[in-house]
Image (cartoon, rainbow, N blue to C red; front, side):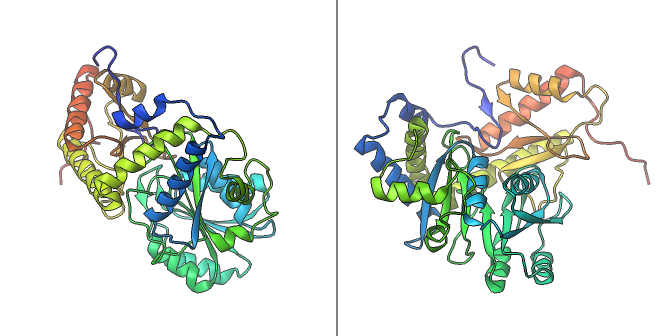
Length: 377
């Protein structure tokens, strides 16, 4: 890597941002400034528009990482005597279960192998089996493996059976189509540093207005109370507590670029092209993705680690980083893997460069055997 040159982040957030997004952070803002509060208001309006929420949905921003907003959504929108079904096929589903435990919310785990989707039929069966379940908390894109769960069909099950749906769309919002008119939900949670290509530091919850307005008194926490944040913003136009001003300004710039690019359809197409270029190039080196193509989302790809005894992830990571690219470790429990993100302000040409960097790193480390040897038939 050239000295002083920023590495390309092949991670699911933080990710590589554009010069215009970085430029937006060079100005300081006062948290009571009218112009800053107008930025927040337009940002919230435009984020609701991404899912076609119209006047029935509102966006409530919250300081912190996306997990802060996931916890806030569950703690605010699920009554303290509610019960949550969590279809669990990865690390971020497990995190929701952990959140429920901390919050004292009853939760039912629906265990699913981490290479298989959350089946709408199994979810329906679980809801019918236990009428006391009030909500489903569904991770749309399980970033631990890169697996895309079938949100439209799951939303339809919840609608038909009258259960609330909270969607963790952290890694899908802006990249994968989500239209509340055809896949209704109580709330959707995402964050600034993902597919809108802003910087980390702010989460947000797009909530059904009627559900949010009925949620007063549910929250376990002042800082995490979405209803209180929403009510205060409606009354004053301001954040309750010190906002991440530079993050908000960067997200406004990033969302402007998202809209100029063509919104979700065009952003998603770029990511799909990135993903295909990556998978094809890595296959030529002998790498096999963990997931089948049918369930692979074009956001992050999990690859089986090389079987060569000389392969050590830390050394591999460092060697690829020396070429200018930052990979991500695997997050699976049973199989050694590593992950490569396809999102951020990058294109398919950059993905070809990534494959070249991986090949050069393997050569530097003397790693020759990529896949397990198989016996001849």
